[in-house]
Amino acid sequence: MDEFILIKEISLYVSLICAILLLIVRLYKRVLAAENEKRSLEGLVTSLLNKYSNRDSILSHYVFDTRRGIYQHKVNGQLYCHKCLLEKTHESPLETQTAGWSCPQCGSFYRNPDK
Ligand SMILES: [Zn+2]
Image (tube, rainbow, N blue to C red; front, top):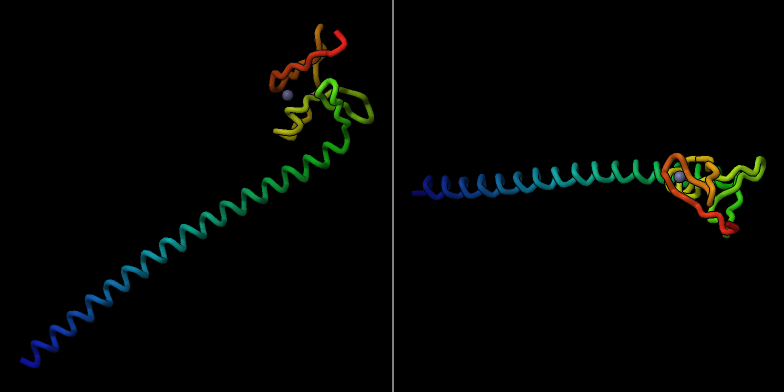
């Protein structure tokens, strides 16, 4: 009879240990997923910081013309698409049209307020 009780207690402890091990495995999987998400977010933050610090550096070469809604290069006076500069950090010179300027990269059109 004592052996039966002992076996029953051992069986109970083995069940508890298995349940605890299962919880540890689940927690470990969550930790790994959180670490992957953290690395992904750190990469995103780094790329955004690079993008915006690079953008600020590029924008320092331009003056924004609020009347026309476009950027003008401080040195050569060339007009640039503000959408491409702000959203893509891409310097896209505008092409002169009859009624304004168009961007060959994104297709934005800036109407000339004097025409
Ligand atoms: Zn553009």
